[in-house]
View 1 (cartoon, one colour):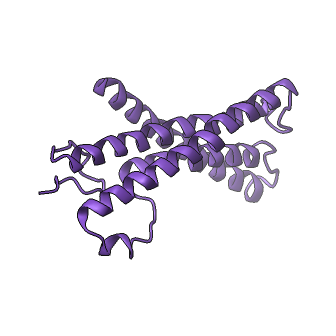
View 2 (cartoon, helix red, strand yellow; view 1 turned 60 degrees about the vertical axis):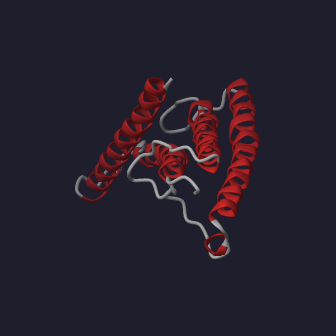
Length: 176
């Protein structure tokens, strides 16, 4: 199970690196064709937009996994460690609800409708349902990472230790 999760994590991060590289090269090509060749490429802007959608949505899942999302912790910082962990569990339950209802189920419904209506992007000629697949995929990863956080917080509340990535900002010491 851990090996599968590590494979999913690595695949997600590698895919994001590839998408960032592709978007960067696409924008460089767009600038080159527009200002040097004086004949702007017709497909580069659309591809950059689609890649940015995927990067933004999947990047939010990676940010959640690494504990890198912005948060206002003025109230939580004044709580006892136990109440802070209970609050974190509540917050991640809300994240799961939102990710499942909007991203996952809403995204699947949207992808199905768009694929049925056969919407095609004008410049690239790809089916728009494939672009919108970023919604349910990111919803899956966000839900998976939020469930992992909840399990870890419950373990820490019960006094057990948790294996965490070094770059996360999450607390990883059990309550004494």
